[in-house]
Image 1 (tube, rainbow, N blue to C red):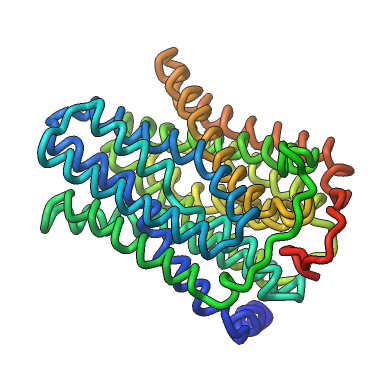
Image 2 (cartoon, one colour):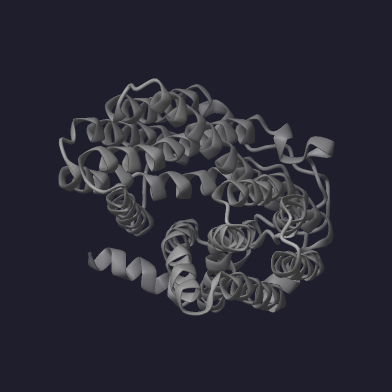
Length: 411
């Protein structure tokens, strides 16, 4: 435990780490909260959850499609101007969405503005991950930073919806949407004004038109990310379905929270100690453990046991995310690192949608939650196989561009 505390103390002593982590919270909590806020606002103004689902889906699809484009722009023109312009457009899109919701809440118009919001969301998370190698030279300390980065995302996933619920109950969902827009604007501008972000210098691209997708290592990582996202997509449905059959469907949120708590614990443990095996080897071990932990959920007889088993099942999520971040930094061709991280976000969204579809099909077929948990574990097992088959690709450095400019990956 003292070794873990020492690792996090070393990280905190780096000059820009506290600012980058704090700004990460300011920029990411509203990013995770705004979809829920838009859902509540649309349902209130139209009186239809079906319309609300269409509007929020439009934003999610647009975000997944747009974030790699933003990542490429950051890699091409640097962080400061790319993020500043994106957040200005995003603020205008949020304004259009709010005005439309309160004046003429037609489905098509709301969906169009929601898509504009999603398409213009600035890629702060991808940009921040690209900065860690510049701010922190030591690999072990950088791994700890990536662990904290992953845990900030876990906190955002939990805190964002809770804050939206509180603001909506007190002042209405319109204020929640507006609050998300203002905090996201301020957090992004703050991030882009920090000296590490302003001084970040893009390297000359080595990925060509395909960008990071030219690297087969990145393709392997994106495939693993899609499968891991599918696992989560199934679990979100399975937890609610299981709780609905034995208790209150809302109790499924307890299992999801326990899963998130397990992920936080796993991230703390993983990020605080050195590891001898290469990250490519660690990834397949983590995925194997992930598959086993999720498979155990199938034996839960009731909600209390399901909640208990969800903690060790979630333990492997954050280590997998951190390991993926490490390998992305290694496999991305020069000048494409931000875009590579952005593609990871798109892969997560795509995988989650795939998992939702699989879960919905299993529910319609009346197979029960046991098979849903087994299917989720199967996605992790398949990801472990793909990671093992792609080990050589994950341990090979991509070709670098011939350039006198410093690489954003650092030493």
